[in-house]
Image (cartoon, rainbow, N blue to C red):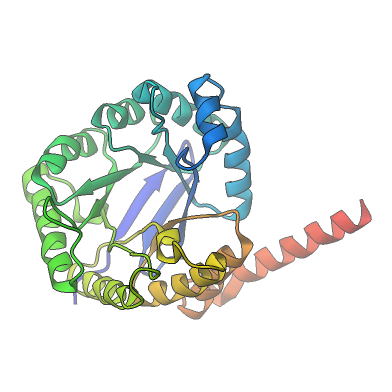
Length: 295
């Protein structure tokens, strides 16, 4: 059994600790133009106003960290990402997950970021690690890593563990990155394509926790892709994943059903001492409902 590690992230003033003994870290996924045609058009026109609404909704919904992706075709992504990060940091002190497949955009974002960021992401491919890990080291960030390579997204747990070991070894030994700053994405696959895929992912989570002790995150909405009643499926899957060792997820923080399932799981897993966060959230909700009723 490996020591269980903590990953520390910081915004302009607030700190978030991701860890197996801590409350689940919710990374809000909304500041992302993928599948949002109007948002893409606004960004091409230089209009970033929608970001303000997205930040507010996610923070109010319970996000601990905000994922920021500016992957819009026909734009200067490095410039756009840097502007978006500065805007988000003017609105909230929460840490940011800087999300891009473009190395120049990641550097632009990291260069203006105040605090300690999470970078999304690398794979086990040597060229991706060589391009991005020096930036992670230079800017003292943490990194999300996916255990897939040039050949495939492996469906077998053993292959994912082999690639996880490679990522950790290369990052720590060749680039001097602390093991605690490597956050593994165990690859949550859509159950609509294969209902057995989550069982493999749960096994991968347990083995990564036990063998390496590192933190884990994933794109939680992936699991229900193509299925009806997706919020219900996500709200069931996440507590099961948490029991298997998942410590974070990039997810929709605007959906109370999913957020409450996660926070309830924290109580049962012993990550919310005496249920105080759960009780506080319940009282705040009651107070808000009472205020709305009298308005």
